[in-house]
Image (cartoon, rainbow, N blue to C red):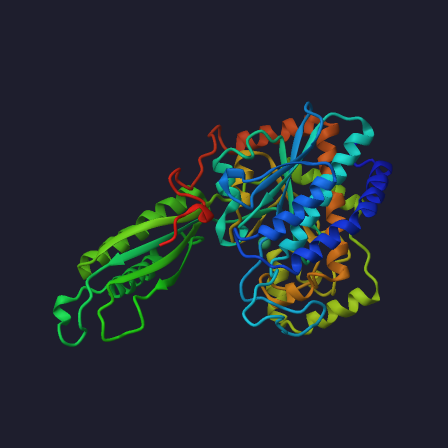
Length: 479
Ligand SMILES: [Zn+2]
């Protein structure tokens, strides 16, 4: 039954028939861009449509107000989850449909990573897979996960720590991008940690000998870490932002200061080891300055675990279903967006998908990227990593933007309500639903995917990189 073109034709028609409510949802979420863990209206909009489709909704997953699970189908048979997101980014407010930077609101938020499409597309796949299951009278259950705070919050990792994904047989998701194809990525695990220093205030001229500067400690810690770079694994990355410099008065010795570190390495154990070395820099800085130091883990996430079994199934469906078609208007707008990008931007983006330079010449992707099971290396991180360590997980890229569009830019926001973005979202929803149906029809496929995960993990169970006592950001007491 796998890749049965007649079955895929019917599925494709059914997805198209359902699609308008979901493209409309993606537009509405685009228009209310909410930051990590504050996505109340976006989550409610998703829940309303899922309830209208007959899904049972569980809110407050892992105690997080905007995390939810929606479920539909029979109690017995396989259980397949679709992962969706809905958070936006700060500073990327942008008018839709124009090819120049034009904020709707100065300093406002915008959907610069396309998560308005991501959530709605995964929902369309979940609903369509459930409908097809029902129509065929097959056993099985579908879940949609409303996952908050992907941008810098690792919402899924907090949900994973509470066991939210433990009973799934497979997880399917996607990300909007410039190309159509399997998203098979080798990326980085990370820890995000606040380091705080406490010193002693004093008049910086009158009694400097009595002061102990927390800002000096932050600066010396950063110097230490910058020397550490030469001696850390090649693929590791460390970034920091000074989140409290101790005040605006140079004539006061700064008594409090804080720096936020993001520490990345290919495997979570390597990131944890690097974190220990960064801690040593903090301790050294505290000793040098006579200050006290402490740290607070903000969040962490694991690296992605590839699942070739599911990736090959998804790739087969993408090849059969093909790319969405584009009309003159789609190509014209995408060409205008391309004119705002440098050749260097475009080449770098094309390479990040593992596409060949010549594939970067088109304005919109009209094909499906070839895939032989070899993952592409990327230096970023995603909280999908933790789900992929627990349950066989597969991701797709859906061609929603002009080729070369960099993530987290106004150009993404400008294309977020476009016809070509909607077409990319609907097409990838078909591919995801088809891949779920492969699993429902063929439990052997799911068994092979699980065996592959077990083998890759070498028999080790999942260990959440976020310690048990670290609360999810919305549950923390401020101050
Ligand atoms: Zn994203």
